[in-house]
Amino acid sequence: MSPFDLSPCIGWCRLDDDNMCLGCFRIIDEIRGWGLMTREEQRRILESVAERRQRLSFSAPESSACRLP
Image 1 (cartoon, rainbow, N blue to C red):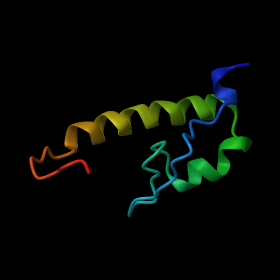
Image 2 (cartoon, rainbow, N blue to C red):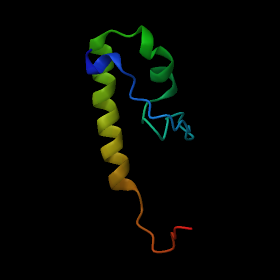
Image 3 (cartoon, one colour):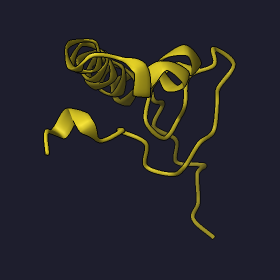
Image 4 (spheres, helix red, strand yellow):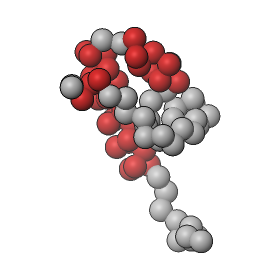
């Protein structure tokens, strides 16, 4: 089985204001169409997901006010 046969969904589906899932970093249209896409289309989305994840990890503010319960 190819890695592209598997969805990048991690089962933590929360959409932000831009309709991007905060679990898998796909936008809603990418999620909806995943099963109908070619492997090449899925590969391109996975590349976009990696870029989004990296970009958002660098833009997340560090806060000393954040405390774990």
